Length: 132
Image (cartoon, rainbow, N blue to C red; front, side, top):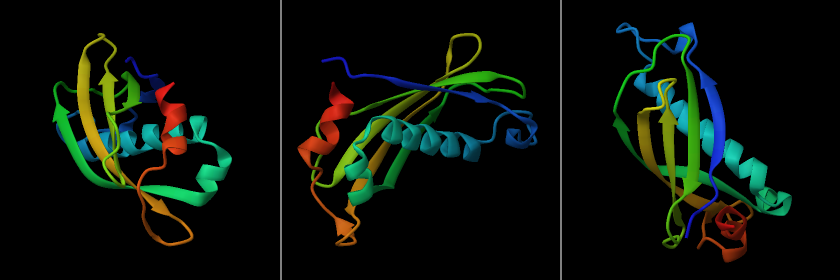
């Protein structure tokens, strides 16, 4: 099954660049979070947004090639396989201006019930819109 892909463009600005002249690793992590949150808001039912929030429990990141100041980087994200309890994986890829992958990541997120203040099993109706 092919899952829907959400895209968001990022611009490597001067404040993103490290002493080596590349986008800093910490910036890639910020962009991973930004695209994930943007995807959630673009698809999630407002009632689900009011009832739950997600927290990162693990990042696995492969830095494949550098992006430099002025590069426009296309971020692409989609959800992983079936959730495991409270955890659900999200995959992200960042494509540089040359069409090659700069960074790819797998991030595990846990869903938290706002009212209870604790993790819960991922409800099927919460993830359904991300699978269609």
